[in-house]
Amino acid sequence: MRLDSSTFPVVKIVFDVPSEGGPQDSFVMFEGLLARRQSFVLLYEKVLDEDNHAHSHEERKQASLWMKKHRQALRAYVKGMIQVEPSAAKRLALKPFASTFGKAWGYPLLLVGSNDQAWALAQDVLDERVSDVTYF
Image (cartoon, rainbow, N blue to C red):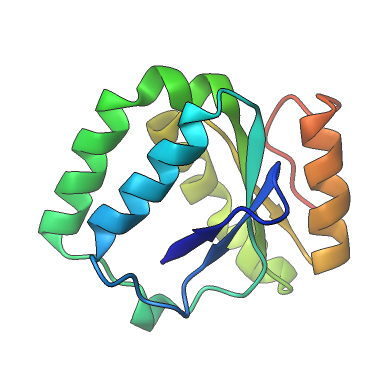
């Protein structure tokens, strides 16, 4: 995974390019974004391939420790993560996960059906017109 900040404050999550340093590189990139001290949203435009993104117990443990260390900055600067999922049924099935995700990471997981909806929602979130988890 890598974070593409070329469209900051919308930061794209790209899973199809593995990081050379593994998950640690992703954490370093994320820390760089937090160090800007500016609000941003994360955007994942592709449907998640669950088979290719199973994280090991050790990776989940590292993420949890990193998340606890950076909890205050995450809550202050990350306004949400927007995931595109074209299937209404899958978006509905992800609703319980989205709630758990928000509690764990400190920012909401927002689910939309298209890239156009994602970009529009990103602007609304950054303009603080959306204050809670939104499902389309």
